[in-house]
Amino acid sequence: MAGGLDGAGRMPWFQPGRLAAMLFLALSVLAPSCGFKAMAAETVVDALGRTVAPGPATRILTLGSDVTEIVFALGAGERIIAVDRGSKYPPEVTGKPNVGYRRQLSVEGLAGLRPDLILAAEDSGPPEAVEVLKSLAIPIVFIPQDNTPQGIERKITLVAASLGLEDKGKSVSADVLGAFQAAADLAAKIPPERRKKVVFFHGLVKLSAAGAGTSADAIIRYAGGLNPMDVVQGYKAASEEKLVEMAPDVIVMMSDGKGGPTPEQVFSNRALATTPAAANKALVVLDGAYMIGFGPRTADAIRDLAKALYPETVD
Image 1 (tube, rainbow, N blue to C red):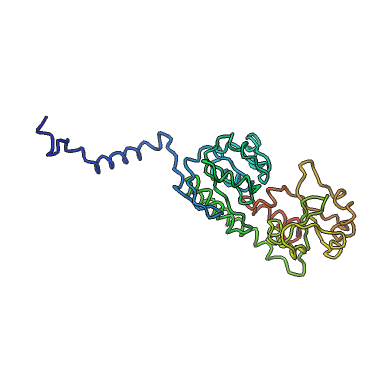
Image 2: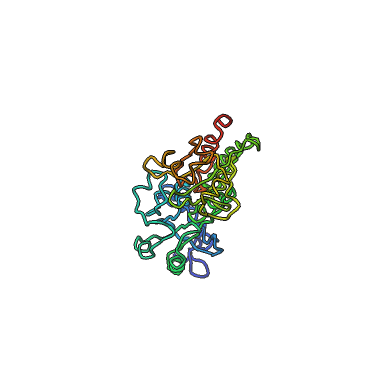
């Protein structure tokens, strides 16, 4: 067989470039039938400006209802091994381990689940737990908190890149942004003089109301409402005197999961009893993640709130 060798003693077909091309072609043909998955991006830049290598991303832990919903919207829900307490949609998440409130994380509990990627809302905490998580070998990508349609797109793009699903991410983003714009356009039908003053409360115990910079404030505005609490930043307690002065037309609250709160419970509160909202029993109750998550379903929440505020105008 010596006559079949080249000057270096190799068979003529044994050339590194040709071999690499043949191997690539073979893998391209076999991939669909062998279950090969798209690889995640080699690195991504997260909400904190950190460059992170997501790795294979086959055992994902999600922290944040919006983050969890985005992973499912991308068709990768089966990769999620655990979620935070606020993640309740889609229904499949109820069967997954729950790691508790995302702002009161236990590092030991998270690491014990052996995730190979953590996708965490930017406001996850406490800070000391986050610092420990960032020092672990487990990749952690922080997803931005941004209460705008562009913010939702940024979330989807980052999650999709982390999972190697960029093309799917573009498709999901296009659908979500289209639905968001259609829902927000409903507010354009409401004349300024007819817009109602709307206050969102987390609960009745401390009457902590949503001010400027909160996702609830953004939802109210996109739905055509006016938030009289937007003179303060974040969530602040609203006194009886302040509520009388603000005179809200509608109160919005999160569901307690037990059929409440009811108008009777809300407007029996002395601080709310004399408001225009109480006179009309004007209470809107929405699921928390649905109302303030700023994820794939936010357009539906805007539409639902707009319909509740202006039933005679919005259909």
